[in-house]
Length: 133
Image (tube, rainbow, N blue to C red; front, side):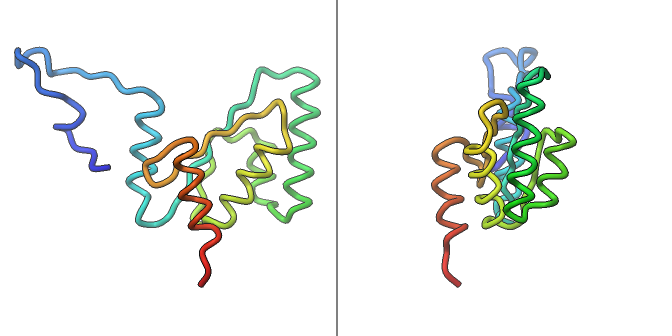
């Protein structure tokens, strides 16, 4: 993905109409992951629901599971309810993504990798995380 001003402001019939554009949150994170693609950086967008007793139990359980799998730095950031986790190691990103997705019903996670999101991002990260060599 090549993000330029021209791609952000599509041409319109009237020049005055191209002074403002709208971006979604997903547009911004996809662009960030595309810009970081050469470095194989994965972005996990964490979704913490409004807090209640169940959420705290789920968060505590997830933090314990992450610690149990040796992901101490990830556990610390999740305990602080960090909204974005950036990983420069595809193997650790894959492990953390799987743990978060599988060990918590109350906390959600979206994966962005190589300018992709969702299933496409998962497939590419899976390949990079399990690459021999």
